[in-house]
Length: 271
Image (cartoon, rainbow, N blue to C red; front, side, top):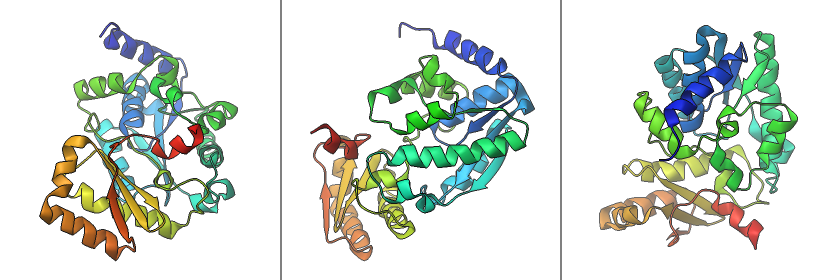
């Protein structure tokens, strides 16, 4: 590695300290957990974490954010929100993330300001500029600070430093909104989002951590790393997956031979 990630970490602490009082948009994922840790190390109680409790994320995620906040020592403010009440989210057009982030980050900014925190930061990193990310436009419009992206932290940098800092998220699969399991244009409902979460639960219970179940009407398309394909194809596991998926209403259960990849639903935008 040519760059010195420890020097980068010192630079991050310095940048955050310059803000004085900060709030962090905290999902409990790899990036936001690392940023919350860096902010708390830099500012102590002058940093606060904000998390949105929404049907767009797995129901267990709010419990995980609480545990992580306690691990770091940072105060956590929970904000209830209904993503499916946001028309631009519910309609699920290609700019869905813009409308969702604009609404949710506006709400978080309001709560942060009421608590006396004038700066809101998010965990976007340098790798995020390489994918289709309409939500980043909303962050720019609201003047949300993204110090990891600004300072050139990649996901690998964040994972390496997270491991050194003893953060349990260092090797966690990247979080993603449950809406990312559906093709653009399919109307989103709380029931559909819950179905997507339940579909993935059976595979997660097998100890597989890097995967997605993409929903295409009656078809479940499972994305896995190649080395995990053999695990789900074992007769016992295959039967468990089939029975579970059928109980959720899927008629056809498939494995994507291209394997797991982030943003696969965006591939149709590049044709």
